[in-house]
View (spheres, rainbow, N blue to C red):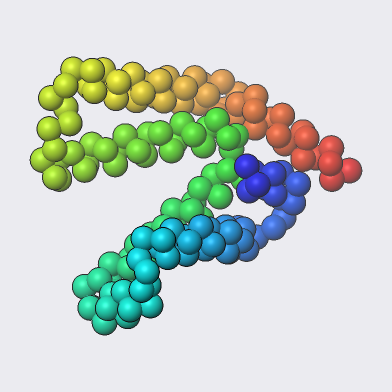
Length: 154
């Protein structure tokens, strides 16, 4: 919510700066959670960083998280929050599908799960098609936000 507010009030802020602010804000709860779950955090971190496999995975995880967050901020800057949630929902669908196939999960054995995932995906697709068919892909939310941001700047 804070990021959406910052994107509306200060649209000229660079996205990497907003990404850094988020990293600092998320650092405190991450550290507290890690400290609660592991009493000797420094020893665990030293063990993780000395193992090449774990160090590489930590690096890849950090880079992919930061990159994904950067893309989310850019999307939030250019589209409405509703459109962002729809795109995020569709991305999570792909993630669930790939995970189920990769790990041979029996996720799709239950008819209710299949119905729920199908409804979620079809709703996202319907929204996307409706938005792209009206007003050249701009929905009412993004127009309202643009007008509000313009009014605040003048």
